[in-house]
Length: 210
Ligand code: DGP
Ligand code: NA
Ligand code: NA
Image (tube, rainbow, N blue to C red):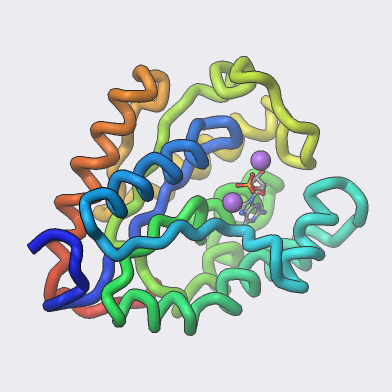
């Protein structure tokens, strides 16, 4: 019953959190755990900087280009839309996707700039709804201590505090919150449990849209 794609689609598991919340390394650890257990699983991340839209986003984040707040919001969304068809076919063929950031980043980061939250959510409508969203909850001050920020546009403590507030308001029924200040191994174990039960429970559930 482990591992194979037989009997159903893959699960869409999303990790969200502030910058330096430990998300990316936990995604990698979860992915290698799932693969080791024989699950058909892939790691994805948004923004996907490899596409031409992704390159525009990357330049913006590096402060190499300036874009209007709504324009960059729509580019982040477009970057998810351009991967939607592949995401759907992967899930339907039985591949579980572990995704580092998704629409919730899109809404929380843009709303933190003061954009209207409903306006921010609108372009996400119709993307595939995650089966599970795991939020790694780290205080902005603690995240900033973790080796510091890398100098990208949003990596400022006051801004991250606003992002955290907006993330909080987005929590819904598919969300699970993990205290990201716990030891890395403890966080990893909680993630494994949440992801494996999600993969087992969603068997037979159809894909739905945001
Ligand atoms: P990352 O590659 O995960 O470090 O993300 C890069 C930065 O972009 C990070 O500060 C989070 C932010 N971000 C990710 N997705 C979105 C999005 O959809 N919209 C906005 N405005 N920011 C995003
Ligand atoms: Na970052
Ligand atoms: Na990302």
